[in-house]
Length: 148
Image 1 (tube, rainbow, N blue to C red):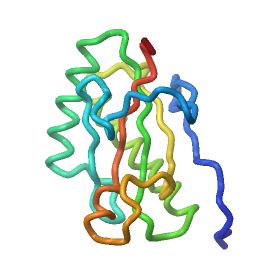
Image 2 (spheres, helix red, strand yellow):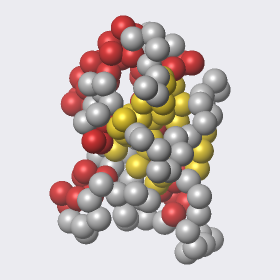
Image 3 (cartoon, rainbow, N blue to C red):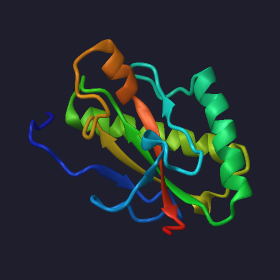
């Protein structure tokens, strides 16, 4: 049975990953357009499959990551507000890992990548509309190194 109380996000160090980005730090995020050209990818409802638009974005993201040795990123998995807390934490984790798997296939070194799931916490758009739900089903890239 799923508890209705709030929980800490599910974190994954993804083998050689980094510590999750601390709240309140200066974040260079693809959601904000400040992640060195990296872009957020979006998912269909209740899916971890990468759609054609996301595949194209990830190909560009892979080139940025491969051509900049110093860049390391944390990939944050998110869901829309429908569904339970535990389910959405798991789905967000699978989304972030699907992104990592594809980036590895494109030749990105796994030491540059880590994951975390926030499930339905921290939505980009808190509205309860289909448009807002679509914005919130995403994998956000946060640059964790270099920090200057």
